[in-house]
Length: 150
Image 1: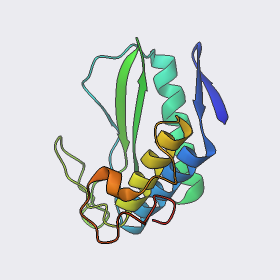
Image 2: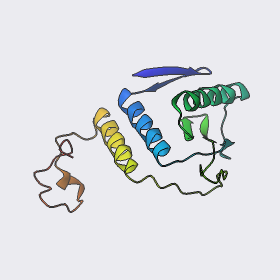
Image 3: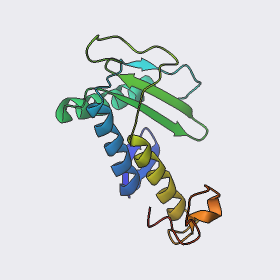
Image 4: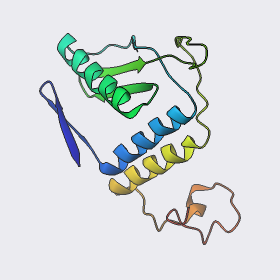
């Protein structure tokens, strides 16, 4: 587990989840996605100092990695949710993102699904040995194919 401190809250993240997030950012870079810094309108209890700290970490990562942009979501129980975006929504046009913009993530969907499934495995809710027939996807030979084989 990796951990960091945001204000008085201790945040933890498994290496697996971090890898998934990094892979997704890499995919966004490959797609040429770049989004402009703007805050989500949802209620949150993050201080101006914490927001500046988040911005510093994210922009530092983007600058050092050459990643053209990112969308960052943070949710802490009792403190609310925060979504911040960085960069522009289109590298060629330089257009800033607008509420409701859709980003094509293509094969990055695999990274999202794998990360979610592995988090469920970590939480003990499913097993990698679970046949995919238990999820009723309608795949052929699903009785003998497990999540680990996917």
